[in-house]
Length: 312
Image 1 (tube, rainbow, N blue to C red):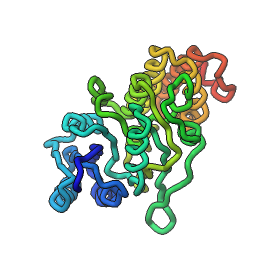
Image 2 (tube, rainbow, N blue to C red):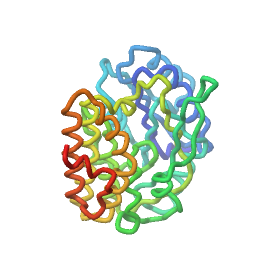
Image 3 (cartoon, helix red, strand yellow):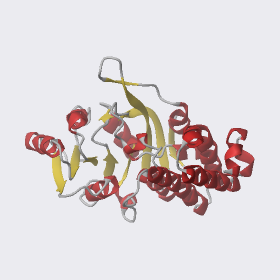
Image 4 (cartoon, rainbow, N blue to C red):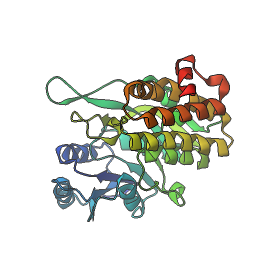
């Protein structure tokens, strides 16, 4: 690399040895080479740390930090943020895959528009019938947030952007993170942070380019695949509610209404199905309380399909 890096990509990982090498290789395959990466081994007990160390030994664009004990995804991302010295910052989870032109598309857009934040599209990387993984299609809610491309927009102009809430589909100016960090000890931590970034950005861009393939692990060990566990449900609902609270505080009423519609269509149906047969009555009670709060936020947007949960 002959020019200073434009972007730091933060790559947290805990016990992801089967996938980490693929994530690292997807960075090495980028068509734009002026990047650096902080690989944060969050106290892994498998070979994740060794894979990170090998990457750094082979390519000086990689830098490794080892947590002695697991601290969680938020802490790992925050460790990386504290080390950023580049103009831009992005994220890639160590079990996901970045598409080859992702950095070029994301950073190139920010350089062209001068915006503070850019969000791209993403797809699921699902198990196939050959024992591997295959990427799916861009889902409708992702397309609604990112297609068509928009330069220097805001939530007032494009409220559906608020549906793109994952950390790793974006790049942003490092200055946007001066007073922002991921909340510790919570699952779904990127939902709150995404809404903070949208509301604090002077302007943001969206692009329809698929920048990341998001892995749905065959063994079901990702925390986002365990919404039947009550503490996970609590974190999930807290993140959804907290994200809407941030939009409320910023006066982004249209974005709140967009989130209510999307949550009803995307998030609630699988939770309602779990609640019907869940052994712990607290699951139904807490989900019902969330639905009532959702109805209070935007009564006109309440779907009849979720109305029964109002009485749980």
